[in-house]
Image (tube, rainbow, N blue to C red):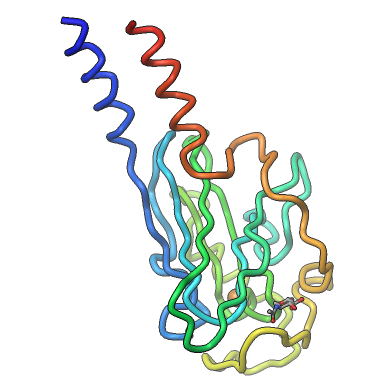
Length: 199
Ligand SMILES: *[C@@H]1O[C@H](CO)[C@@H](O)[C@H](O)[C@H]1NC(C)=O
Ligand SMILES: [Cu+2]
């Protein structure tokens, strides 16, 4: 009896999903997929495959600027991948709130203005397409918006309204009121609580 209760609790927790997002696949300025629909407890895991990108939380209104209010957003920091690498950095977070969309961009100028943005749970009112269009309307002094860029550190064009881009020190990861960085931590915590209740 007890065994089954525990097993059921475990199943509930384990049914949380992990979404894997490829960053810079085929050397592109892309997240694949560009958005995910996730629920509380799910993990979004990013795998950095090329160049030198970030996953940095922003806001719907200002896609290419790191979020500073009401809380500092989460941020993978720069994840540089040397050419020919066979191991790839990963960074993930676990969703704490699935009631509102969560917006992200790459903080390597001018990637955001070239459309390198990502969202969790975009809504009917705040669509991913609209978010991306705003990002691409952000000032890109390099112009053109061709799809190919030479690699990482290219400080042309600080992003939209001159904010994103060159504030080298990204805020420490974590502390997003709505999210927990470090995959697993929240899940394990939940598991502990559930198991405690059942036992
Ligand atoms: C990655 O990009 C950042 C920002 O442009 C730069 O400061 C850092 O040196 C780059 N890292 C590597 C290894 O190129
Ligand atoms: Cu990038």
